[in-house]
Image 1 (cartoon, helix red, strand yellow):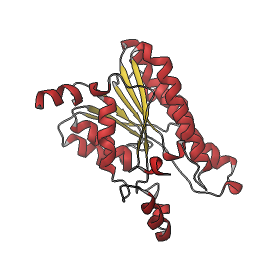
Image 2 (spheres, helix red, strand yellow):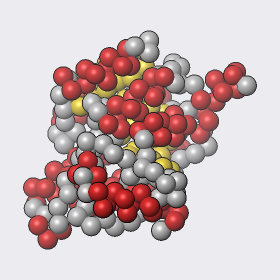
Image 3 (tube, one colour):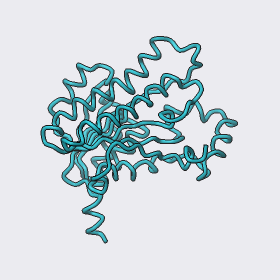
Length: 253
């Protein structure tokens, strides 16, 4: 059984890039990929912000590299990530800012959509150059429940994440014949620094937890297995899919 699992799920010999890896989901996924055997490249807007994640990966014995990159700056993305030999891309970097739709400014819209959708596309385009040349690679994009349902006060975010889902499907259809698989995960309700504003409302938290069939909010480690699966040989015939990791929320509404 050990040899079987090793052949199916091991990421040894692979090099993974995780964007937005300084905290929260990105940091947890980067560590999970390292524990599965991958060497890991981390990006965030600040090198200092990556220090803790890098240290946790180094402690696993895997190689780790840190790169400062703001994915809203496409020239910077190309300069920082172009030419890297990457086998696995986890397109995680994203931002959210709760705001009533009637009050959304152009600046807020651009900041969210440029990060979550435009930036994610150009990161994928840049990293995929090498994958397409070699004829192999896997990309896992971070979609969201808002890729499927409307969430009040999260219109720019929902628009960006709906776009990520469409991007995932289009890239998978285009790149699968060239050996590159593209999938996504859609996390449900996970408590992170970015989503903390929601959880400060006790009535909201109690009401939302009651709507989740598994009866709890997600823990960051709940995301790791799905990403390792999508990055591994176990999912060799899976592309263009979005896996909801939401405790059954979408199935129950």
